[in-house]
Each structure stands twice: as C-alpha cells, then as structure tokens.
Length: 233
Image 1: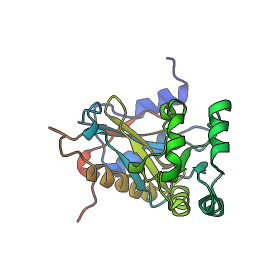
Image 2 (image 1 turned 135 degrees about the vertical axis):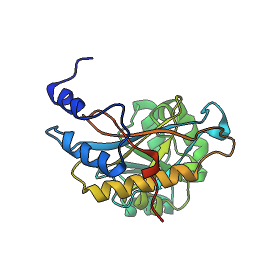
Image 3 (image 1 turned 30 degrees about the vertical axis):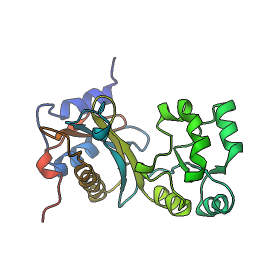
C-alpha cells in the first residue's frame, strides 16, 4: 500500500526500533500528525493472553478523565419507565421491540454503542449475528446490560469507553483527539493502562504486556516504554 508524503515524512521522524517514554511519544505524535482534520489518538496494546480461552477474553470499560473528544451515539433497548429514563439521559435511540425489528429488517446500525436492560436481553440476543461482528452487542461485563440505564448513558457520553481483546491478542482504544493538551492525553492513557493491568486474567502465563504503541488516525505507530505507563507513587 502506497503512503502519502505526509505519512512518509512522519515515518522518517519515528525510530521503529526505539521505545519512547510516554511523554516523549505524545510529544512526537503531536509533531508528526499533519492531517487537515482533527485526528483521533489511539492506543494499541499487545497482550500475552490466549483470546480463544474464555477466562482470558480480556474486556471491560474505562473512564477517561478527559473523554474521547467524540460524540458517542448511544442506542438503548428498554421499555416502560426505563425507556423514559434513557431518553432523559440523552440516548440517541431508545425503544424495545420496534428497535429490534428495525435492526433485524433494515440492518440499522447507525450508532456507536448499545445498552440494554436485563429483561430485554432475551429478544436482543437474537440480534447477535448483526450486532456481534460490529462489537455492538450489550454485555454485562462491559456495563452495557443494566437497569441503571440513565447512569450508563451519561457515563459513556462522558468519557467511559469499552475495550475488548481481539483474536490476535490486541486491544485498540481511542483515548482522545490530537488537539488535546499533552497532559490530557497522558492522563487518559494512564487511566486506560491502570484498567488493563487490573483485568489481567489469573490464568495468563508469561509476559502480560507485550507491547504498547500510540498513533493518530494518519500517523505511524510510536512504541512506548512500558515502565512509563504507570503512575509514579
């Protein structure tokens, strides 16, 4: 795949063999990000786990102190009072059987996250083939199956993000925008890493954190030194 001049110029400034401190990496990332739009900053984490084993399927949520800088479109499966609660909290789409029908018949997936009350999961579970591959299926482990839908909507709109290890053992998480202050990006990344460490499976053997890199939408990855990814005491 042929890369543009800006990417090639950025690549020339990043030493692929070096692991930068988090502070250095963020500084370099802001230097090389030259797109004409506000790029998203993402952290890529390579974990020493076996995702094929249920007890090593790392997933969860983390509250980013400074949010992601992105408006999160939230759909809520609920009925009765919970439907009204979700609307008041600011959910973009709220409903029960009507929404399920729309997704099933129209393949409607114009949202970033789905939340469901537990009593709706019997019906929502039938949407697995549509929502599952897109990472949109509500799950208790990620806090997206709950009766407290108002709180969940506000938390995810306020900067709580969901993460899940992929089949290759990697986790990709957006942690802000390139126009964030360096300290804001650093705090978001450190909060993410604290959570990643906290959900380490007891059955995982060997090195848990195999590699971490940061990048923006159009930049190359910048490897980060693991020892700089924890808060100093």
